[in-house]
Every structure is written in C-alpha cells, then in structure tokens.
Image (tube, rainbow, N blue to C red; front, top):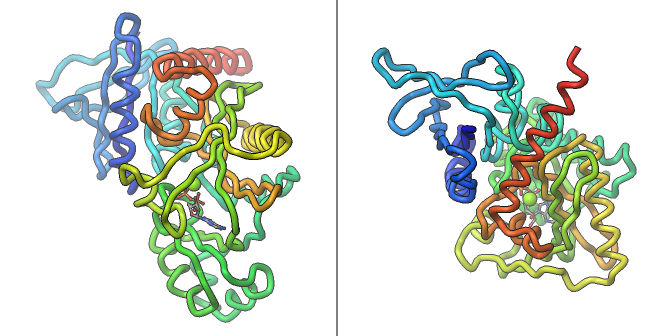
Length: 342
Ligand SMILES: Nc1ncnc2c1ncn2[C@@H]1O[C@H](COP(=O)(O)OP(=O)(O)O)[C@@H](O)[C@H]1O
Ligand SMILES: [Mg+2]
C-alpha cells in the first residue's frame, strides 16, 4: 500500500507544514506502507521528488500520481492521502475535496468539518448555537470596514470593548493576529487581519491561561488530558509558538479535576459541532474556572514535539502508534461513508 504524505502548501504556514509532514513520513511503518512524500510549493504545484505530478482518479478506492512531464516516470498508485497541510488550501476542506473527487481515502476531517474548523467566524456561530461558551465576538467583513469604519468602531465599543484581539477568520500559526489595547488600536489591527482574509473577528481579550485538549477518533473521539501553554511573551504569538524554547507545555495542566473534565467534554462538543473525524486540537481560554473555547484545529502542528503529539503521549500514545491509528481511522471513515454512497 502506498501513502502520499502532502506537505508544504500554498498558505503562509508552508514551512510549519513541511516540518510536520517530514515527521509524519518518518513515523509511518515502512514495513507496511511505501511513503510518497509529495511537496506542494507556495504556488500550488505538486511534486514527487523532482517531478511535477497531479493526483488523478482511477478505478476503485485509489488514485494515481501522474507525472506532468512528457518523458516522466510512470503513474504511481496511491491508496491513502495523508494531508499534513496547515491553513488555507490544505486544512480548510479544499484538498479534502480533491481527495473526495478522485475517490481516495484520506486522513483527518472531511470537507465540511475542515471548512468549519478553519473558519473561526463559522465556528463561532456554530459553537454558540451548540451552547459552547465563547468569548464575546464580532465578525467584520472587509467591505464593511472600508465603507463604514465608524459603524464598526461603534459596534466593537458596544459589544466587545477594550482590550480586544483582532484576527483573520481563516488562518493559523498566529499570523495576522494582534492585541488591541484601546480604540486607537482597532484600525491597525483590523488592517492587519484584512491583509490575510476578507473576514475578521474582534474578540474580547481574555485574561488568564491557555489550555488545550487533543482529540483522536471518529464518531466517539478519545480526549487527551488537558495541557497548559506557558510562555514569556505578551501573547502566544508566532515567535512563542515556533522559536525553540519559546513555549512550555505542562501536561496535565494544574487545574481542579472538574475543570479538566469540563474541558474534555467541551472539546468533544466542539468536535461534534463541526462533525470532525481523525484528529483535532481544541484550544481554550481559562479565566478563573471558566472555560471559553477559542478554536478547533483539524490539522494541528504535527511533529513529534508539537502540542498535539505531546498531549496524546501524555495518554500513552507514542508518535508512530498515533500515525498508524490515524491511518486506520481514515480507512474506517472511508468504508463507513461508502455505506451511504447513493
Ligand atoms: N480573544 C483573545 N484574548 C486573548 N488572547 C488571544 C485572543 N485571541 C487570540 N489570542 C492570542 O493569540 C493566539 C493565537 O490566536 P488563535 O485564535 O488561536 O489563532 P491561531 O489560529 O493563529 O492559533 C492565542 O493562542 C492567544 O495567545
Ligand atoms: Mg490557536
């Protein structure tokens, strides 16, 4: 069986994804699977080694990687796609849609869950409807901000107040996000967010701690212990996330048992709200004993030393076993779905 591991991608999280994909490729059981490391360049081109390739359908639950060169290597059959892409065009349902279209099983959340998990504004709306606690949030579209900035200022002052945070709806790794200390900071923070997306969120600034739960499974996911993120930065920015030594993860977090239980059950509710499968990491703000779900990441940072891997390791899942479990879950989901194919 051959597994195509997709790394890189078109989003600003390209480099983060390359690191995650290399980790996954190295952890796949080489005695059971042949790994095809496919790199997607920032322009969107796919390559297998030096050869530009495309994923195309074939008969059965498989696909083929076809060389795009006239005298390139012959087509290679692919039994499973393992997308290890963060951010837009990878974590957002687009690559998942390609896999559905060509009919090949793939690891992780499906098209809908990926799109809902990627979009912080849609997630906010869904989570709120599901009774999942969220920080006060305003969704702002770029045209509204361009045409009626005073209206946006008024709404933020009324619904959120200061300090606040602004962020693009569909990105990750803390890109495009900034704190807003006061009303004068709103414009620059929204302009930064709108440099990345035409949809942005303004949220009340949480005071307190950041905790996270890892999830693994399909219909009835396993929730990891709660982990706490500690860092010395003003907030958990890109540098704190990726600079070696920039953050410290404490597992299990030092919180009362009922907070831990509450976080794990809220994480599963967030999972169910988007209809997730495979894996996810749910991030929270913790103010006193009050938990607010911040976001769900359907392809969280994925190296053996990333938060998700370490949360799961805290539960006895070693990294290669995790990768194998994700492969098994992908085939299970694919067969389960096939039963409903009309
Ligand atoms: N409303 C908020 N209050 C306080 N800190 C925030 C808020 N929103 C974001 N942050 C800070 O920014 C970081 C990244 O924000 P997040 O929404 O998780 O986006 P990303 O998808 O880039 O991880 C958070 O981990 C936190 O440190
Ligand atoms: Mg986050």
